[in-house]
Length: 636
Image 1 (tube, rainbow, N blue to C red):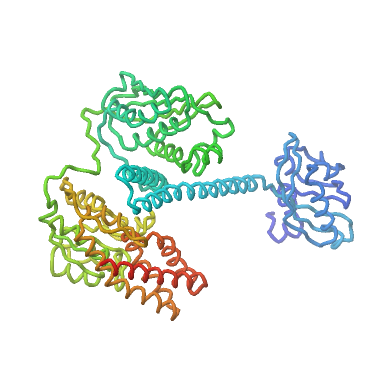
Image 2 (spheres, rainbow, N blue to C red):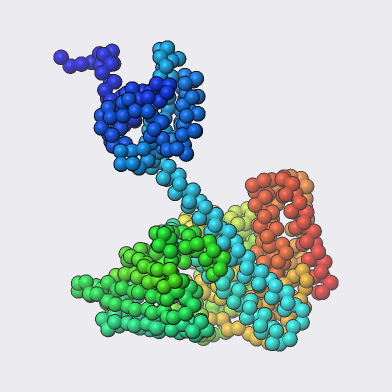
């Protein structure tokens, strides 16, 4: 006769399933800790045979450093009906320790018996996960401290050299200061590119090329790149290319170049004497498939054995002191590993302290017949007006940004029209056809994302127009929002003529470059405003600079007034909008003293509207902008 569930419960048959054979360890102990019973789970979890712990004292299996705590919790359990969540360690049969957590039931409260039922759960994996999370968090905090230092250092150098340039230096001093600025800017670019590359890889957005390239050409170019640094340190930098590897392969030479640059750069950085050798071998797999082995061997400081397991992790370097001494983001090897694995390869490292290191990675390639030269960002100009026959719509609500972009388009001979928001843009698109639309993202009335969606769902003859985002938000998430809305590309503000040209040229298909003009007059330096960026953007076109300054003087007082009034009336949403709108102008005009404040004010206005910090920042920003306006008016 089949047993009913009610009978199963009534007979207490669930006891064996829950207590005897359950996954939790059940101990019954007296108040002194003597074990009177334990279930079968001690075998699976702790390694002890059935009943082998009966008669033993529970406390003998707890490590000495935890004993006072466990005994205290045990005593508390004898006074309470229930106690829960008590973490401790218990010695296993193999002498190792496992983390357990017990919940107790006091039999004295229920049955008048001085004993405890301890329901113990294995939390070893949870503790390991917690420790790993804590370690990763500390590594990330260390990274943020490092990256803050790495970013501030070149910015400080740029700001300092720019200040010296405004103090009428000699010609030789000017060259020294400008070289220092260029070097600091290059360092800053490397740091930002590392962060953006890692974000791109981890989000799965990085696309790999499949073009022909010659390894010998690539390696020769790399050796030339690092030869000066190697000579300065008196290090021999050489490469050997196995005959079988000296051929055309199909793949992504840019990403291979990036991997090698990171590894060779590290080798040069950490090697103070001796040599750095790069060797490449090729093993034919089948048909035209090859597996290439790359070895980068140095005689540098080496890596401690206990750090080899984490050397490729995000935000990790062998030692924090390494970062302080040598600099860097700690992302280089992470990017290398992910780029290798993205191309279905693998990477390993062997190292000995004070002897050197060898980084070895394997990549699969197919043999090709013809190498395609990797295109650079700069092209030889074929025309003074590279986009003369193109019609472009510029959608931008900021007066200065609109003037800046318009002036560039005018220099390039484009036919262009402007619109200050999405609604006006849609009206212009209905009445005219454009080859490209430069679309600001954050605008009043209708923003760039909404406008783009409307265009893509509109007139079938015009819905496929090229749309390039112009945005001050530089994260991968913001970039992806632009693409998801239907945009073709994204340019980050503040942008250079070359940035705009590269994007238009890439999509409109004319590989020529705008010709730069020299010999323009320089505007006088100002203590509040640094026009060096504006001069660079305009190729020292004084008429253009004067027009930008004039527009700034016309529009900025209204923006200042709106910030002041909106803050006073508690309309912090409007404050955030105005601040976001003028943020690129602050950079364009070189108002360095406000760069950090303007960003913080926008964040405070959004996240903590009406806070004392937001109110103070609004007042300080308004006062500083008024000073800038007054200063510029005196010089006009």
